[in-house]
Image 1 (cartoon, rainbow, N blue to C red):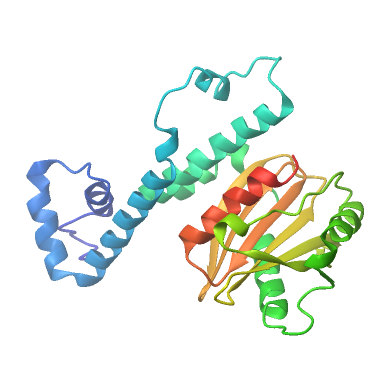
Image 2: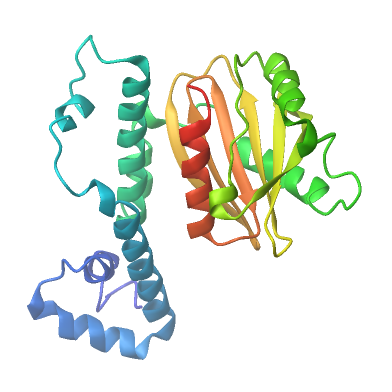
Length: 260
């Protein structure tokens, strides 16, 4: 693309990918893409991501009587309902950022959805995965046959009452076990899972008493993907060398099962 006198602008490309480009301009953009395979590949990636996000939120397309609660929850709404309302708003911002591509970062900079010091969370999760997922004999401190003890022990160390270790077997991942590890200089927990193909993923939990916001994001490092989110004082990260679609499904299931 000629930056000094662009034939097709970045806005044109994003509008084309999102299906919002006027018909009169489509031929010009398509001609440009035919001569620029790198740009065409990027557009294809955006469109595939759009399709994945539409599929993810397909179950939420129908209007419900409770939808107004997501905007103006009354005082009688339970704490858990409020938690899901905040999560829904954060996920909506995440989805819009992924769909729009160009405008996503600006949306995520809104003050109500800041990462609040969680920038180190995905890197710590990646490091933990790289160190422990490759271990054969000692990947965890406490194995799955002592799951109740593992939950009680780590729950006490993280000051989480009734900590529940997520069950991921419906998604094909069986608990290997878990361990205590530092997260931002405080006690943190890591749970490891494995599928029948021998692929492993880790779920890390840390606490930051200064955080009060909710955020959801992806981070990538080579073949390693991490989906992480902040929920009040607690931060969570799901990491593995698996597809983003699988990782997202695991993260959603963990979110449903972890305490608020």
